[in-house]
Image 1 (spheres, rainbow, N blue to C red):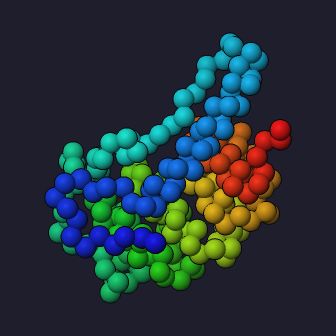
Image 2: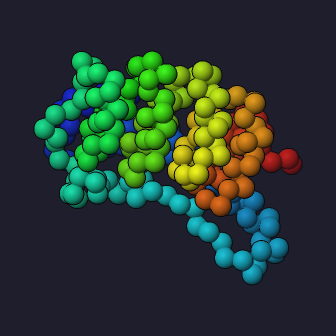
Length: 207
């Protein structure tokens, strides 16, 4: 499901399939939110409309945490021989490619050892890293449900947004009530993810 980075090209890396899948569902959610906004326009004439938040890496392939316009090749990339503790530490590395590869490898470890680090990675400012964390968590299936439902009410807006997407992949009906709350979140991206997930679970707006 993930593409392990062995020798990244000299040019900017293309977004992973994980990022593409997450983006497609965001677009669907954005379309639904736009329809809802159009219906309620007359009621909200005096309110400022918040534009959907799209992270910088969705529109430009840059690595601000690397201190460069385009990601350079790191001296060392994580590999399967690394301990879980070392991989968790690598999720905080300054280089986007190191963080991204560490997350991919962590997804192969026991959920009890890796889940909290993967949830923390939902806060990453790079969209590729964040989306890899979303897909890595969803790959654990229903065993991640309880913790991810809790994350829907996390104080961090990006954790809420990421958790909302993950719940749509898990399709756990016990998360519906919490997901409906996130669909009214102040953070546009969290709302979009929640609405898209509700649609994916057959809980779209009534017609």
